[in-house]
Every structure is written in C-alpha cells, then in structure tokens.
Length: 455
Ligand code: ARG
Image (cartoon, rainbow, N blue to C red; front, top):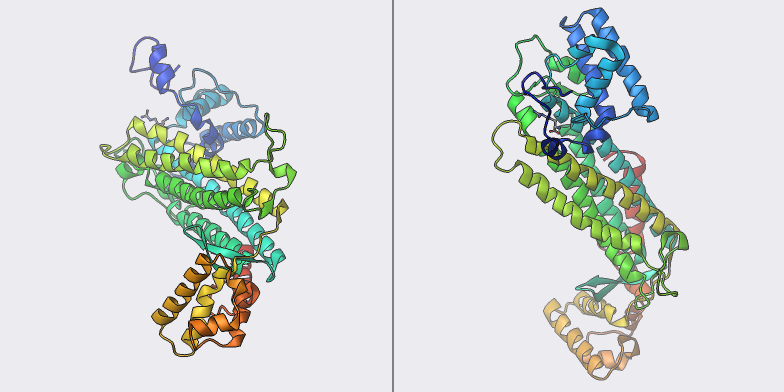
C-alpha cells in the first residue's frame, strides 16, 4: 500500500520501487515523529481536528515514539520512506483516524522540517564534540608548558622557534572557530518549513507559527515554495562539517608526520594506534590518516549538495531526496573523527626535538634592527651569514662573537644568547605569538570560551 495508491493502477514495478525508495531517511524517525506531534497539536488548536482526534493521534504518536526509542519500530519493505512508515504504523495503532495526520501537510514540507530538526540536534552535538577536542588541545598545551620549544614551519622548512603549546593551540583555535560556525548555523535552523504543504499552501486554516513555536523555533517560513524547494541550510550544515573535517585533516597530517621515525615528535598510545597484518614492527597512526581521508569525502559531499540544488526548477523535486545520503555521511565522519582525535591526543606522549639553531636568524636580524639598522640590511647580513655557514657545513650554534662582529659591527656579545631557542621564544613580544606569556593568555581565553559554552 502506498500513500498515493488512489492515483496509479497496478503494483509498482520493482525496478521503480527499488530505485526510488528512501531508506537512508530512517535515521529521521525521531524527528519525523516530533514534527508530526507538533503538526497534530497545531491541527487541534486551529480546530481542524477535534479534541478527541487530536488526543487519539497524539497517543498513537507517543507509542510510536516509544517504539522508535526502544528499537521496537519495524520498517517494512513496502514503506516508501520514513514518512510512509510513520503513517502506516500510526494507522495500525489508532485505526482510520490516523489518516488525518497528513491533513494540510505534504511529505515535501515534512521532510524539509525533519532535516532541520535533525540538523538542529546535529549542530549542537558537533559544537560539543569540537569543544571537547579543542579543550583536549588546550589541556595538552598546558601540560607541555613553557619549556617545550619546537620549530615552527613554513613551506615545511624550519622557520622560527616557538612553543609546542603554540602549535597545538593553533589547532585549538581552528576547532573553536569550526564550533562557532555550527552555533551560528543555529540562527538559520530556527525557522520551520512545516505548513508549507506540497508547494503553494493550503485552503485549510493552518497556522505554521503554532507548530514552529511548539518545536521551539522562533518562526515559520515566509514563502511556501522556497520552504519545500531549497536545501541551502543542509548545504550549509555539510559545509560546516566539511570545513571542520578539513581542519582535522591538517591536524591529522601533522600527527602523521610527527609520528614518523624521521620527526619523532609523538608516541601514540597503543589503544589509539593500529598494527600491520604483515609488518610485525609497525605501529600506524590510522586515525590521523583517516580524518585526512574522510575530509576528501566531505568535500565531495559539499560539492554534491551544491550541485543537487543547482538549476533545479522551483519548487520541490525528488532530486532533493539525495541530500540525506551526503549529509549523514559527513555527519558521521565528523562525529567519529573529532572523538577519535580527542582520544588520540589525550593519550599521546609528545617529545619533540629542539629547533635547528638557524631558526634564530630572524632574532639576530631583529637585534640589529633594534640598534637602528634597516631591516633590509639586517636581513642581507644574516642571510649571508646563513649562506656562509651552510657552505662550511656549520650550524648557527657554532657562531662565536667574532663571527658576528665580522658580519656586522652592530652585533653585541649578548646576541649569542639568541641562539638558545628558549631565549628566542621568550623575546616574542607580539600578541598571539609563541612566547610563554602569549601562550598562557591564549590558553586562558580559549578555555574560557569553550568551558563557558559561549561563542
Ligand atoms: N523521500 C522524499 C525526500 O526525501 C520525501 C518527499 C517526497 N515527496 C514527494 N513528492 N514524492 O525528499
């Protein structure tokens, strides 16, 4: 039995059925029931359903909700989608009055609403997951403290000494901004499409504002065609997930590098590493690799979401059914990736080596700048010194004061202290930089934002 059996004769062809049914949307079961309850309450309030009908249908939906919660709800092959399944089961539970559930409603506004309810929950869950991840980064940064100095990198070449905590907090900031993006999305999920019907509205005295407020939303759609025909908010949700996964992929890449013998910055806890079926000695950073890999799928999903809506004629088109596959996939990947990475980071041991002494080059140049030498000249002098040392196969750490004095009369003996990465780091004076003071301030600010639950 289909929801549209009155119109078409015969049994649906199996090829048609298999190709068009939606099973991915079963995940929307709880949302579909929640939306249905609000719809019925609204129908009752405006007098389309009698008090008794409203009560009977609501009681049936409550039973359905319990079945959904306990896993007792059984989908049938004959259910075209989650909406058909809910209506079919409701009629089984309460009889023909269940047929009034769909009054003034279409699956078009129903599915648009379900997805918004799903995303509302999902956005809150991702915001929490990203906050947890960022807090783990803050904790690790704090634990490493002001002692652990590493090279910062540009072009994957050693750049300047910085605190390792500074590097980790960069990822903390990214996760925090990814989190804020989900919180901001909440404003656009605060508008209900329910009541838009199939396309152009209804002759019944529906009140979309009532169902919206019962669902905890500030208001309802402004245009029924747009309400059923657009998926911009779903695309935005996928963008938020994809963007967060891109951030995680960069952290993943750093962890992959750091866990190599060549870098040797991190030892993963056995519980958060994998072994090899063939190479007995291997301990692999698969979580880090997979977040990197799953970001590729997320970028594909975002492209698919945008392409899905591109050029669609107004209003609803069945193409839109495809939105769920893409959205659910990135949703799962982000949730899994954030929690796996948080566990990996919380249990890893970090032991990065000190930066090469040549990373003091800018500090030496800035010492000259502090004595009035134009930066361009200071750069040239220090660059020539670096070239000479490289040619002689020497490190900056082997420099003596006479080397410095030969290079430029502006150098002073105390400038040799700059070759100590800890001294270099302690001299960073700019906000947001890698000095112990700045890093302590960053830890404090980030922790405040994330623990306060505020964006
Ligand atoms: N399964 C459909 C979807 O996800 C529900 C809406 C179906 N509407 C329709 N007119 N066939 O988009």
